[in-house]
Image (cartoon, rainbow, N blue to C red; front, side, top):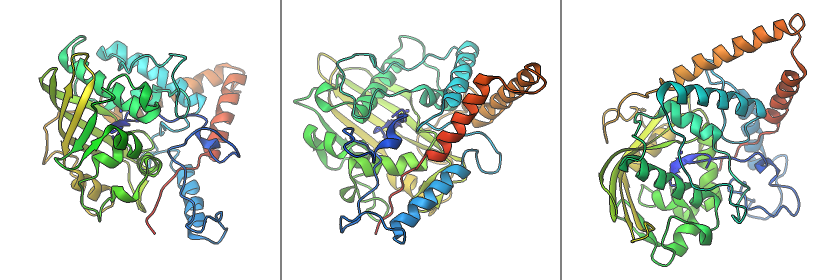
Length: 380
C-alpha cells in the first residue's frame, strides 16, 4: 500500500501502494510503448543477454524461484501476488475482501478516480484488489469514516498511486510548481528530480551507501528490487495523526511478507515492519508542497540483505498493535476454507469432475504462473 506499494502500497510508493499489472510481462515486445518500471538492466556493452552470461543465469534462477514460490515456504500458504495475478487470484481475493468488510467494517481505501478516461497511465490502469487484500489482513488500525486519520491515510495512498502510475502533470495531490520531498533531513528533491528518480530512491537517499546507493538506481530498477522482494505487496497505514492541514503530521507503518528475494538474499515469508514519522505541508487547496519522511532505513535494508535479525519492528520505532483481521494466519485459514468449498463443489458437479469455469481458471493460473519472470537487479 512506498509508503504503500502500486498496486503495491508504499509511502514511496515505498514507498505500496504497489499494484502490478496483468500486461507487464510483455515489456520486451518490440515497439512496446509503455514504460515498464521493472525492466532488467541491459549489459554494459549493450549486447543482449547470452546463455552463458551471469545476467542470463540470474534470470533463469529468478524464473525457477517464482515457480517455487507459488506457495509460501514451509506452510504451503498460497501466495496472492500483486504482480500479474490470475483470474483465480482475483476471484478469491474479492470473495475474501467482502467477508472482511462485513466482519470488521473495513472500508476500501480511496485513491481517487481511477476510471477517469483522460488519465495517461504509465502501465495501464492499476488494479488494487490484491493490494487491498493484504492491507486488510495486515492493518492494525481501523480509522472511523470521515476522521482526520482516514483522510490523511487516503491522501497518502492517492499520492503514492499517482507517483507510481501517473504522469506528473496529471497528479492531483501536489502543487506542481512548489512541490519538493525530503527523507531523514537530507537532500531536498525538487518536483523535477522527485518525479524522475522515483519515491524509493529519494526515500532511501540518506541510507548507508553500502546498503543501497540511490544514485546507482533508476525509477525502474528501484521498483524492480522491491517488487521482487515483496511479491505480495508493501502495504501502508497511518497509525496516529497529530495535526491536520496545513501541516499534517503523523506516524505510519509499512509492512510486507518477505517471501521473495532482495539482492541474492531469500526471505522466508516473515513479516518485515517499518515505522516512521511524516510531515506533509499543503496549500489552501490541500495540495502537497513539501513531504518529509523520517524512518530507520538502514535497519530495514539490513534485514532484507540478511545482515540483521528481523525483530518485526517490536523493539524499536513507533508502537503498533496486532493485525485486526489476524494477519497471514487468518488468510491461510480463509483460503483453506475456499479450497474445501471448491473441492466439495467439484464433487457435486459430476462425481468430482470440475466445472468448465473452474478448469479454465486453473489452467489459466498455471499458464500465467509459468510465464511470470520477476526482476532482481544485483550490483556488478
